[in-house]
Length: 148
Image (cartoon, rainbow, N blue to C red):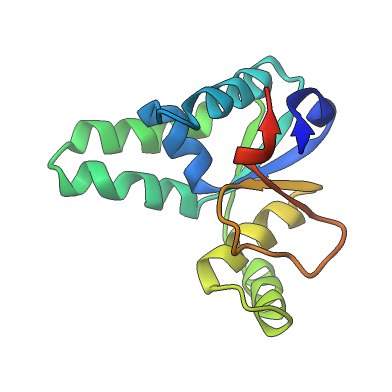
């Protein structure tokens, strides 16, 4: 169990679920996700996310015919203060393949981890218990375990 204040001064990678919880006001995880984004906005915590997050976030609005919401995500989220979106480069793809080769990660999760790790993150926040990282330089933290 970690406290939000333990992340002050850290650079954290964010999984798509963290965005969904905050944007949709999830009944259980909406508050911790929102508090985390408030700390990121204030610059107390720096954050990174793989560009894949944008694609994953846009799917539901697009399926529901909510083009404006999908476009808002694509336009506004990359402008969020103290949050960097990482492009998937050839180096990231190779790092993701290495992660997959040494673990049971799926390709998308490996890309999220490789991108944020390459961007200097030391913690990756998710709520997916199946995500494990074989490299001890990146700590996996479940949002459900984060005390705000």
